[in-house]
Amino acid sequence: MTPYRFVPHTADVAAELRAESERGLYQAGVDALRNLLVGTSPVRSLEQRPIAVRGTDPTERLVRFLGDVLYLYDTERFLPDRVLPLGVSGEPFDPARHHALREVKAVTYHGAAVVPDGDGYRATLVFDV
Image 1 (cartoon, rainbow, N blue to C red):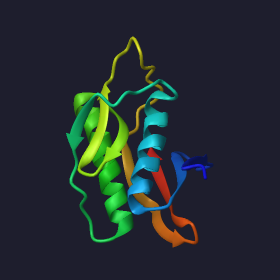
Image 2 (image 1 turned 90 degrees about the vertical axis):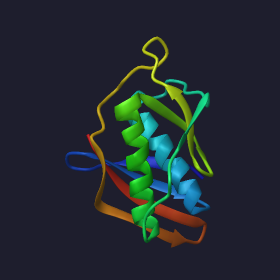
Image 3 (image 1 turned 120 degrees about the vertical axis):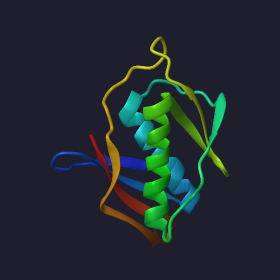
């Protein structure tokens, strides 16, 4: 099962995520966000950053989690690699190793939805670019 794919959207970038668990959706979202930020540039799990999971439902938790990951990139230039039980691991952006592709301004609630399905969960997210 492919964890994410980008789908057509009028102005921003939409992604469909699939995973066996809610935490798996976080990883699929991190993978999609990292792809938008630096494409296929390799990112290593060298450091950890804490992120508290917040929200009243799976959709709100996913959007807030990915928003916090994006905040780490915006403020520390920290690129995520793996979702951990209490946050993410990754490494600082290194212009010698990473190619910045685009600015991602936000992870939006517009059209966001997490839905259980027969294989676990699927989600739709829109990234404001």
